[in-house]
Image 1 (cartoon, helix red, strand yellow):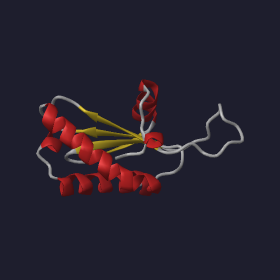
Image 2 (tube, one colour; image 1 turned 90 degrees about the vertical axis):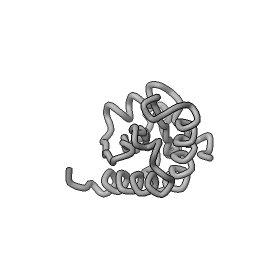
Image 3 (tube, one colour; image 1 turned 135 degrees about the vertical axis):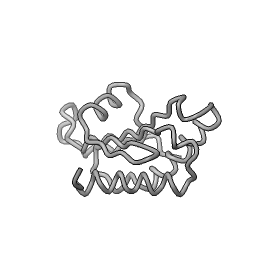
Image 4 (cartoon, helix red, strand yellow; image 1 turned 135 degrees about the horizontal axis):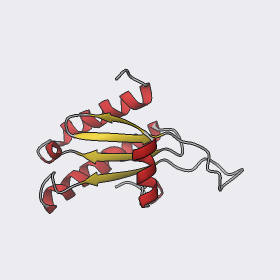
Length: 123
């Protein structure tokens, strides 16, 4: 499970990541990344932790399928949070194909999207 300090919970944080961040799409998901920046409300403190949130709509499937996809994405993101710059906001939005994708496919799509965002790959 993703640690509490790495969870994105506030609506404003989701909106910031989606509207002001970069995005990379794959067949089963879209990743939005707002790179880490200093927090103007906390001068002199260490960088805030990277936080991740997940959006899984009803288009993905029923409640059981949506929860399974969220659990898989949280598990995958837990191992990848350290790769991101401190203070980053990440939103992973599952597409309808994510409900049929297995764990390995979700991992490949997440890795490819993050590599594109972090490596600055061409569009």
